[in-house]
Length: 330
Image (tube, rainbow, N blue to C red; front, side, top):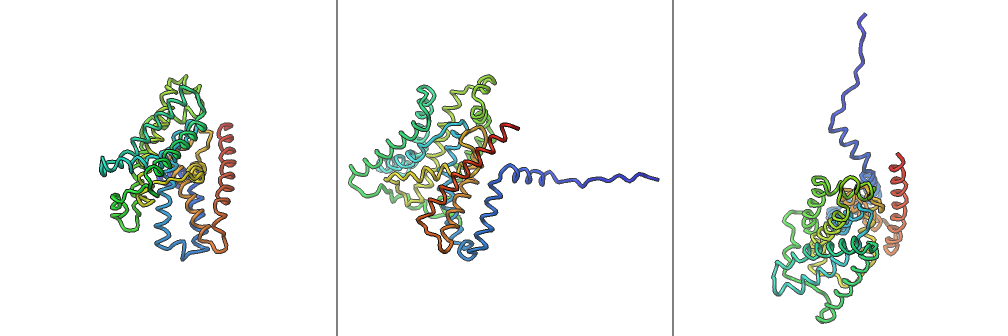
């Protein structure tokens, strides 16, 4: 008798890649779950065209507050200067527009790059904790923004000439979302197509081991801060347009939480060593979906939304910490 051999059905490499993507990024499951839940509870409001456009717009703003600082968090440090770059960078655009015209918008990424260079050098050379350093930088820039507003005697720092940027050339895709795409593309390129992402993760995971492997730790720490500043400046253009071509002049600590929440919810631990901007993008979408969905639910007090987000962020930090410990043990 002939022996019949049973063969297992071959699994497509594409299916394997998709499964790995879902397995290594629990945030994707969270996004799908949130969409299903809110679509079932408030389908007419949640799935309306106007609400989906609003989600894309909020996603762009949240992502631009998170993508840049992610590169610093990979190092095991933290960069809170993104709000200072966003605020005072807008004030510089307003001040320089009469002299540079429309080209003054390019001040944003240049200013962000210089701030990142300053943060990186001071953090590395003076060994000042990055949290304290970048928080102080943000406080200084927030003061300078308010000072410019008060000295100029205007209520808002607005440049109407950039109004054309608010008109999206593609229906249903808001302009802030389109303007955020260059920063997103550059972040993903640096993470996956250069050695920078690998080196930053190596430093955040084991700094001494990175040194023994021949990585110039001090150099790449500065590079991480510079990338954070540049991407924040580039992304601030999208936020600037979202706010009606004006810069914010009042310091709101909740915006700091917004960026950090997106990073943590996406699965990048604050301890560093793993994660990346791709996860922060997922985290930004989670943050926006939760905030948007809760706002649409009947009986939910809008004033309590920040409380819910804070509790969610605390839970995400605990889960991320346990996941990191498990990864280190295994």
